[in-house]
Length: 64
Image (tube, rainbow, N blue to C red; front, side, top):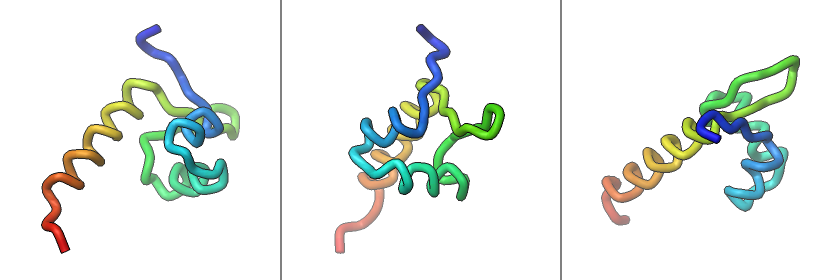
């Protein structure tokens, strides 16, 4: 499904983070999330694009 929508819990599993951490990231605008009747959701395509941007940012940052 091209427009698959994921929940905070599903994203937490994929990122191997606590639900609360992902919820906080969504609230702060750190994830490309949106609300449906008060519940956070992410389109899989947006999440995958976000993951790519995160990976590229890590590759570009100088080593300590």
